[in-house]
Length: 309
Image (cartoon, rainbow, N blue to C red):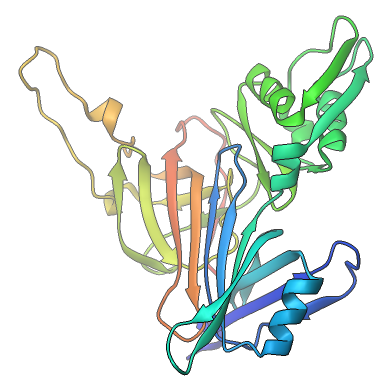
């Protein structure tokens, strides 16, 4: 196998009380499923590690509460999940194979329990409001938010007292966008735009698997595992590669459900990532990224595409 397609993985358990130390489990047999989405609720990861010794399993369960998973290929690797361990599970798949399961969530404490008790001064900008809310939630802000929040300043002072996710939702609605927690950071994506960065080309030469298809949820496509594909970023897909459904006129005059039910694939170019699911098995076949994305307005600013790897 060429270096370009040589798999790479790093799995480290971390401790909030001792962030400088960790438990490296990268050399063991690992299976994982990571689900990232452009929704408020936290991303999740399910990781299975095979044939962990009793001593290592006890150490993992008793001393560590965080997990960082990096995966990809030798020339294209990166973090695909960073979060808090919610559950450990030990068991056996067979007489000879035991396992340690890790169930983890990305920033679920900030989402479920992040409480804000702040007073905003008159004239506070959306950026300042978001920073105060993030501080109360115990999360950090994606730097891109400084350029994407465009709402007006507060005409008078305001008291914030309640769950941070509610106030963050208000800011997102006011600025015509969506917010989510991605790898511990509060991320904002405009409804009609995308996050800055180089678009990832997805085609038969760059790792595409199977045929993309336009569905009622968006364009669905699968490729070799690529950590550069992130929520709110863009991918580039050729329209001629996409399987599409055309619904003809039915009983009612002028009825045509295609624009309403199926993703727009009229134009070649950019698609914004709504869902990115990474699946891998260090000793098996799966090593994929499954994507659901939406076509962007063809008048949007063109972003130069970048080949996989």
